[in-house]
Length: 266
Image (cartoon, rainbow, N blue to C red):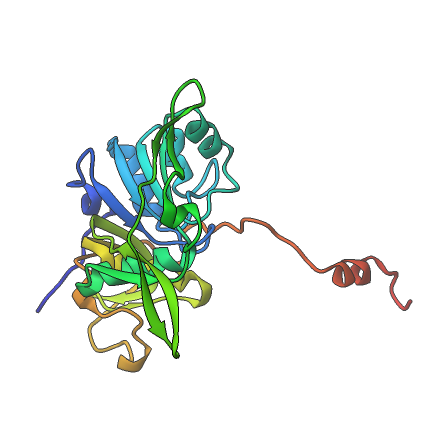
């Protein structure tokens, strides 16, 4: 029987070398593979090129690798909520390939599906297509590396010509993802919003490492409930349901806040 389980997160990431490229699941702080990220931090791996929607916050998620100066380049769609990210990027210490969110998702999916590139309308008429978007700054604040011009072609859609920009797929050396449940074959089930970029990141990695809150035996997962088939997953580590999970911002509506402040019986 195929058994893809590994004993610990440290063992599962032990062969990720300096300079590796990683696709990492998560959206904000939801669905972050934090046990795998912490194991990677502990073993000292550096010079990483990471593809992820964002880079966590200063003290959690991918932010802990960033603070330790382990990341050379980020390919992301959102870079807010992290002051150290801003500092490193503007000082020239970090390279950033800023990518529209839907395009980033499709680049990962395409990479996992064997599709080399695709055309999309997103980014046409902007620096995404025309080039010149800063990717790395010099120490003096000038642009040291800028994005290049991308191919733009016109296609007839619904009887009218429209411009589309060519986007290349993403394939990485490794992928790190978080799931609610998984079996020993690597089939994964995600929990609600924590699904986010995790399946797409898993697809794009040549070697996918998944941390799961609960490990079950093959056959226990209802086939129709499986979100990602085990063909995309190569290693699986059980981390338990009590693993730390953070909420980026706790908010309530103004009306809810007001109702909570009203005296009883008012």
